[in-house]
Image (cartoon, rainbow, N blue to C red):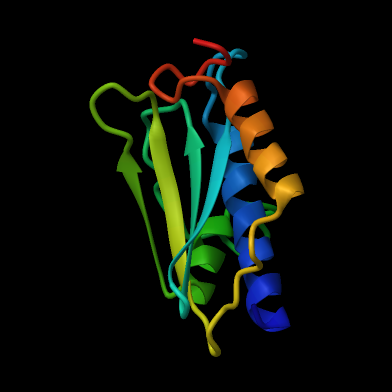
Length: 135
């Protein structure tokens, strides 16, 4: 991915994960998940899952406010964004954004280390229907 797109994606991912940590108020045994997708070579989709059913509500921060601008930033920099309940059999919600990439992404070919990381993550995260490790 182009460096500028990578930096924007990291900034917006940081905002969504920070919101999940600060506002989700989920039980200690629930995890926050992140998924990065390339539905096409010119679109990046980033998803953040948490165990709270409360959908985020953008607010307008006053100039003197020290926080409250995260979703405004996401709305300003992302191509699109939204939040959805995870659906029947799943806990919580998904907050996501997409970025149009100025040049097509060329994902690296998976290697043995990548496959090992995926297997390790699946073991750690367990069954997504409960959001708890090993269940």
